[in-house]
Length: 195
Ligand code: HEC
Image (cartoon, rainbow, N blue to C red; front, side, top):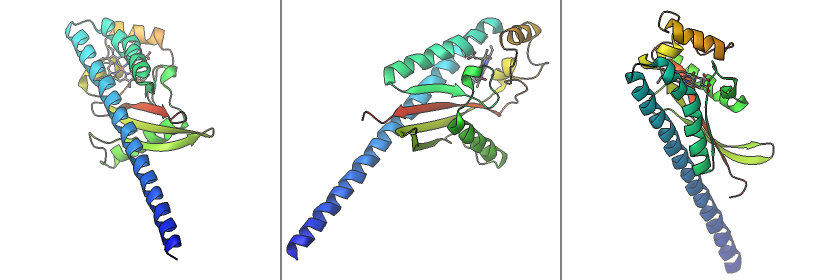
C-alpha cells in the first residue's frame, strides 16, 4: 500500500513539474513574441515619422514597404521566428493572411465593433499545423491620422502618391481607412518542433 502511494505521489509530482515547465515555456514564447512585436512596431513608427517629417511622402512609402520588410526580416533572423504584418485589406499580396491569421483578424474586427478592443489586445495559443507544433501570436495594428496619407481616401492621399500606389499595387485593398481602424496585425509564429 505504502509503495502504491509513493508511486502515485511520484507520478503526480512529475505531472505537476511537467505542466509547470510547459507553462514556463509558454510564457517564454509569449514574452519573446511581445518583445519582437514591440520592436517591429516601434522601429517602424519611428522611421516612418522621421521620413514623413522630412515632408517627402513618396520617400516615406519606402518605409512602410521595403524598410518594414527589412526590419521584419532582421527580427526574424535574430530571434529565429516567423514575424510579419498581415491584413484583411492587404496592399501587398505578400501580406495576405493565412487561415489562422484571417480568423484572428476577423475576431479583432468583431471586438472593435463591440467596443472590446483594447490597446493591449492580443491573441496567442499553441497550435498544431501539418502535425507540427507552433506557438502563434497576433496583435492588432491600429491606423492613426498619419497613416491616412497612404491608407486613407482619395482626398487624403496626394495625387503623386496615389499614382505611385496605383502603379505599384494595382490590386491595392489598403485604402479608405479611417483614424482608429484596424489596419492589420503583427503575426508571429514560433516553431516548437526542435525544442
Ligand atoms: C508613405 C506612405 C505610407 C504611410 C504614411 C503608411 N503606410 Fe502602410 N503601407 C504603405 C505601403 C506602400 C505598403 C505596402 C507594403 C509592401 O509592399 O509590403 C503598406 C503596407 C502596410 C501594412 C501591411 C499590410 C498591407 O496592407 O500590405 C500595414 C499593416 C501598414 N501598412 C500599416 C500602416 C500604419 C499603421 C501606418 C500609420 C502608422 C501606415 N501604414 C502608414 C505605405 C504607407
